[in-house]
Length: 311
Image (cartoon, rainbow, N blue to C red):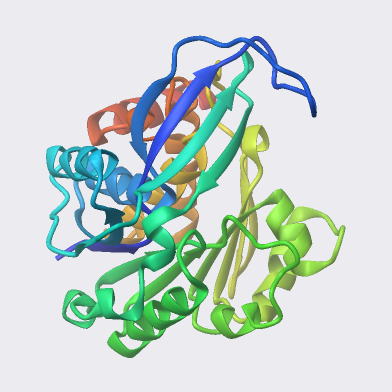
């Protein structure tokens, strides 16, 4: 049975389009505010579920209207609510997102209930894991909870995938403890540079990051695609060319598709290509969760672009 289990954050995203990103101290008038479900954990769970993979999601929301909205959105996507914890007297996490005409964005996250996702919320996690599971983690929840989840994954023989975002500044000294529990590490350019302390080329840097513990490392490079390194060596994956309007959901679309592909048994190189296609497609739509592709959409997009590249 193919299965992705996500332990992570659930937010409500409040997004606004602006003519340009504001400089420090500058006020910019934007369009109307759009409220959409989000959070890296929720986005990645929905991304995998839309691609047809059975998905479980462990997260925390507040006992407020935003929490109701998040719950309803997950239910509509077919993500079970069994492991969604409601924290009384605490607000649901909120992300404030500003997007310019080129699709670039700035994001500020108020964690809210995500910061209260404690070990107790993981009581049902061991039963949800087995050797065919891909366990997906990010860093929008407490580090101790993330580490506990990773250890549950290792104990069950699941494949542990960590999207090390947002990476704290400075990088905590105990980050190496978590990385030793990780099978696949996914980072963007900035996170890769900060974790490694190196300015080497991306394939060399990806290979070097394996020395921190992960069996495999994937570095996403935005419009340049991605690189990966594992025991067989390194490989570069060019991006799928698109006209981007909003990059907000690209990273989560990539991770969700990567996890879904790995859960279905695809080799890492093919799974990374799948992630690149999903990330590119997500940038052609506004929002994060609202931009995530379905399986037919992703299949069609990837097949069309692959045919064009070989024409």
